Image: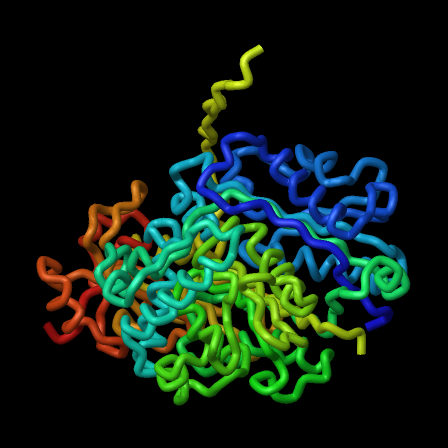
Length: 393
Length: 159
């Protein structure tokens, strides 16, 4: 990287179904304010703002960036909105890193926000994200397309609904340690297996909620970071890849290879050769239980033929080899456009030693993932990976 | 003034109509379905993939392929599926099966409904749907075809 970049302050709002006391820009402002306060900075210190917000049809306000710019500190400053579907928060973080690494800006505020609670028609909106010419007729949406991916992985890796339920139980339990989490449920494997079937094999407790919320982080240059705090989170590697689905890859192996390349890019930049040994905690972008299992393979932590075993032996548990989703993850809180920035913030808190009840011991290196879009005809999907470390070197 | 206020929600609605431009390639695909009950894809001379539904460009080779039409056999394999139990208001009444199907020698799969499977017992139905099973495309009669993907349905091959 041209210059080292660190996160020196973060802010999150508590994720809920509906924040009835604030308007959309006020929600974004809350997180932006918290991040600046956390860094001990004021608006005068901020050189630029990067703003992430995903499908505006959720808010039903075209160009939410125009509405929110003042709320997120952009007055008299350069401002840019970033949008890559569910990966928006990750791309927002990457854009902030680019701003600082380029040497053109020293302090950049990244803010991402979503509210999903103002319309009952969330899946209809997601269906509208599939191109109108070939896809709309089929009620393809995020849940149905993820369910279809899950069916393929079940077949290829010998996974069952029990494996998915084990992950769901873990993540829901982890969220109990996260004061910001939306869903905080103690559930058993039976509870998950008996929950309402949405699209087989996905049941209600395998799926993420819809959340209102905002998240922000202050990215600075090395020089500024060292003046602000002794416990910064250093950006060690970034990777981003785009896949274009000409409607479903017939070869699952090729699909995994494409997904993994974003992670590999980030590992190369961070000097990581064996992620399973060198990364202590992962905040993946996993809105469904099966997605976390896919990530064990796609992020390079194991091969497909080990996956079922790794799940059975609790690989990603808080006490496991590499904790995944100590915050509960996207399965427990999903303010869509913000969710991938929340992963970055949670990973940052881990390496700063500030994750409180959800802290993983000796977390020196963490991975934050963003995932946008879903398999479907003629659509792209976006993958972002960011590696954060406790030290600049 | 009292501190208790009623938190308002202001109603709104986007009621916007569109006429989406399908483009020449998609238009020809739909015309072939309607007039000739033929499923046509476009083939890239570079990577040799047959893309279905057809596109004017290949995103791997980044070239135009809009003149390279090939016919695709109306039979193939089921690559993925899900049985939808939840009601979505823009979708059919559940339960129904959505799948991705690879027809003929097409590289890519198309989404469609899988018909011809009894769905009164979902556990039983799941035993009859297998990734890799052979399926076929069955066209409607000409006077019922509209130039849409639903001009044919997908059902298990071999009865």
